Length: 274
Image 1 (cartoon, rainbow, N blue to C red):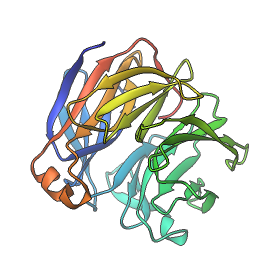
Image 2 (cartoon, rainbow, N blue to C red; image 1 turned 90 degrees about the vertical axis):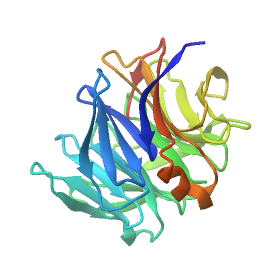
Image 3 (tube, helix red, strand yellow; image 1 turned 60 degrees about the horizontal axis):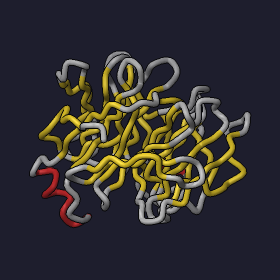
Image 4 (cartoon, rainbow, N blue to C red; image 1 turned 180 degrees about the vertical axis):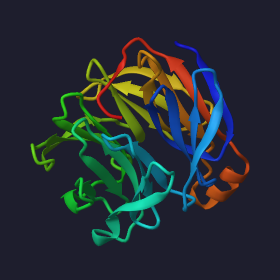
C-alpha cells in the first residue's frame, strides 16, 4: 500500500484539482479562491472568483484559465490582465448549478450541470447540449486519443463512456464500469486506460479498469472529492478531501477548514485530460 502524504491543510472544500505548468491547481470552495501548490509545497492564491461554490477550472489551448461559476451559470475566462470575463452563458441551457469541466486536447470544452446535461462550448462561446439524463456529472475525463469522454455518475454509482465525434458531439453511450458501492466524484485517467475516482461516502480513492475490476484502493481519513495525476512524470496522485457531514452542514465544514490535499506516488502515469 503506497503511503499518502499531506500536501496542504486548512482548506474549505478543495475541488477540481489540475496539474498545470509545473504546479497543482485547485478550487477552494467556500472561500472563493483558486489555489496553486508548487513541488516544494508553497501555496499561492492566484485568483478570486465571484461565487462560493461550486466552481471548477481548466484551460483553453492558448493558456487562458476557464472557471465555471456554478450558481450563476456562467463560464468565465481569465484574461492576461487577470480580469474574469464571461466566456459563455450556460443558463441558456439550464438554470441549474453548473460545475464539472474538462477541456480535451483539441480545445473542446465540456461542462456538466446538476440537471443531468452536458454542454459543449465552442471557441466562440456558443453552447449546445450534447448529453442528458446523467445522474450528476461529478467528474469528467477525456482519453488521450480524444475519442472517449468518461463521466462519473455519482448517484448511479457508475462510470459512463461516450464516443467523441469530430465535431465534439457525443454518441455511443455505454456503461464503462459499474462500481457497486462506489460513489465516484472527480476522476482522472492513466496510461493503461484505467480510471481513478475519489469517493466521498467511502473515504477512499479507487483505481478501476474498464468493466469494473478494482485494481487499487487507497483509504483516506476523510471524504475524497476529486483526484488528478500530476508531478513531473504524472505519477503523483493528488486527492482533494474534506469532511462530509451532509449538504446541510457544508457551511460548517468550510468554516472548520477540514479540507486537505493528499499526494500518493503510483506506478502508472497519467494520460488524457485533465
